[in-house]
Length: 534
Image 1 (cartoon, rainbow, N blue to C red):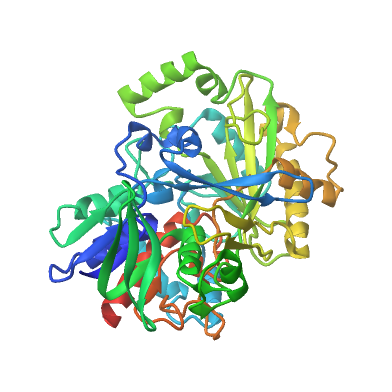
Image 2: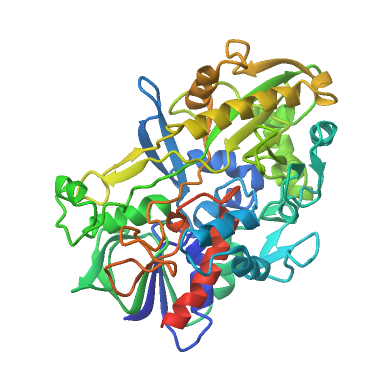
């Protein structure tokens, strides 16, 4: 018997395990289906390319085809201590004041910018130093690119020539801006949530970690959650009990999955899967929102960028040896080196698009196969509609916890998203037609001249066929004040006592940017709520 059972040792779960176990009189069990984060690839920032495709480190979830006649997506999530923070691109964003204030305005008191900023400042140890909005001395190290590729300076200069503000820390400013990405990297090594929060807490006698242990359903006594049924790696099933709370931190895919397997979800979905309905909650698994990234790739006219250092086995070995000696070079950098926030059209109030830029390029994407870095020099852009309004859904297909999910990504189903994507694409082409970067480019290799800048449907089609999932799913257990909202503003599941959700699934709308940082700050704040409610 434990006071708290936290399910999922990802970005949120690691924070909760650390914060809740700080009270020596409180016992905490952390349940994680993956294993410890010991493999060397988990420390190498550019190891993300190896980690995404390896089932030892990542879960792979296949969606429905992203459009009729198209291919499905493969959504990747971390399968190791630290969860997706151990396999992601490490980009650190916080969203901005209007994002969080809008969340509060939707009926979620306590989630405005002035409420959330102290959590960000508490978790951060920013290499650029502290300010009124930036933290130092916290457990999570955040830094900028230390030894950038010279091509990145030209990308930033191009943004400056087009009127974007050049900044050192993109999180410190509003408006259109460009600069080096802030990332969860320290001294050339990945700094995951496990490294920041879980490892320092592991020696505490009141914290128990059950690795390679899968939660299969929540246990109830009437309307109260009292524990979790788990399955060990050997197949043995066991019931673990919680005196105070069960806290689900499995992310936007697996938290609603576990609720549905436990009988909490849309009645028609549960009955079709052969699960008894405990609580008919139609929004569990609904309201799914995800970023769909538009992709552009270019061929360079000189031997510039990182392709030559990453494309062949020999080059990778040479680059790897240099990294091990110095903790520098392309392997020490985040997945994308440069970021920009910009407006898709001049008349929008604030930036509604994010652009990630890198001095490398991938070859053609083939479904089911890992993408390879091209041998010829190239550069890449990945851009997304920051606050998509399109919604998808997910549902269990069986009472078997190992059965596949039915995931409808719902990309570009709203007119808003399609229009912003098309306008964004046109701005990107303007960017790469401007100097100094234009002087380095011979041609656009994807999507290429077949997609015209005035063809909105062609642009959206290229994003669906050759773009990327942003790996930023939200909304499947969204918080809000209405009876239909799955969770309330303190992340408690409606209709069930002692059951809480702490992960990105509670966000009803997207914050502007990548979600790893916001999830950790939300978990830090959730720990305060849990202690207060306990």
